[in-house]
Length: 335
Picture (tube, rainbow, N blue to C red):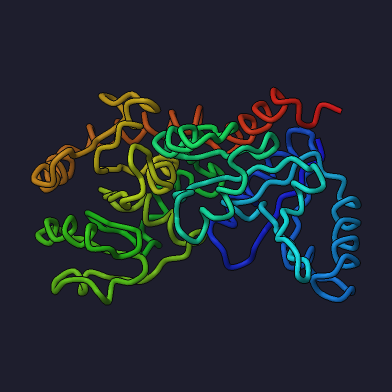
């Protein structure tokens, strides 16, 4: 299958698309990474028929069986002078797929998404079953539930002897951007050795601001945080209704120990008793943190079991296979 993976620099989740593209190629497909800006860099006068023909020739040269992008990036539009706004790939009858780890109903995204409601050639791979159900109610024909995963090469178990060289050791850590909800949760943990990494924590309440360390790089620093924090705390943003966010899979892939707010997907994707620790009420969180700080063996066994599950079922290799199998069942890339 010829796959064009569209990248929009500066937008969300570029690593997701790079990871998937790598696995598409490893499966024997031809996956090409193409920047949106390069595709739209045209010599013809803007918004003219000539420009659209030039753009169409660029697409033809790629010869894609499918175009895949994060969110609505694959919904590439072209505006004719005094004419309609058209979806380039729909017009050229090229199948499209969007990977959604954010709500497709965001006001910046949904106008483009809504234009594809009755399309036979647009596929949405959505991380939360709630949004899949809502899309189906609105008439979307090809919305598929696909949980987030982990890059199990990047997020991995780091040898214990590296601990001494790591600056990221702590009893409790949190990684993520500030929000009022997260502020409320983490206030309950001020009695612990808590370190916070992420964006926006200058807005945090007194006490939490002093626990902020730095933003932390996804590739070079997060694996150390997840490995060398005794307890990694996760607080899901509001748009995650039933789903698990990226941090869940990344921490577990590192064999880091995780305590998260409860989501129903924990029971769908994991052995809830053996692999997961989650709080259903905020009052439970400090007690859970203290318990697992005091019980090293239980903490480590849960972390080992969760890592085995992620390696077995929740890698981007598995997600790439799911995408290809789903598209091929729909007749895409079958020659």
